[in-house]
Image (cartoon, rainbow, N blue to C red; front, top):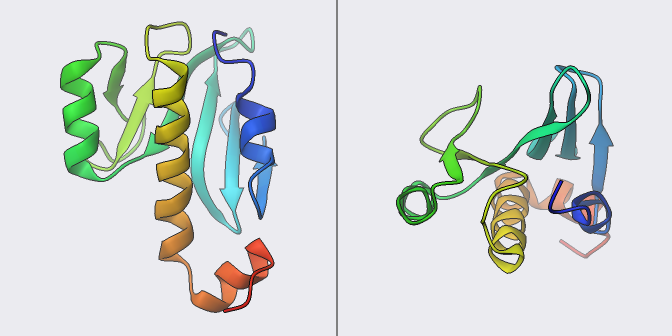
Length: 121
C-alpha cells in the first residue's frame, strides 16, 4: 500500500479505536461509529480506503481524481473510496481522513465528544 502511515495516523487521533471484526476491513471508530476503513481482499491486501466527506466535496474530488470512487458498500452520497496504490496525493488523503474524523465527531453528543477526546464539553 502506498500509504503505510494510515494506521498510526488514525490511531493517533483522540478517541479512535480500530475494529477488525467484520468483512475483513480495518475499521477506525469513534465510539461505535466508523469514520474510515481499510478494506482488505482475501489475501489481506488493501483494495480501498473508505471515508466520509460532505457530498459536494466528495463529488468534486471524484471528478478530479480517477482513484477516488463512490463509497464501496457504503452510501455513495456521503462515503468515498480511494485506491490505496493510486495517485491521490498524501496530503489530500490526510485532509480527507481528517474531514471524515471531524464529520463523525461532530455528529456525536457534546458529552460523547468530550468523553472520547478528553476535552471539556
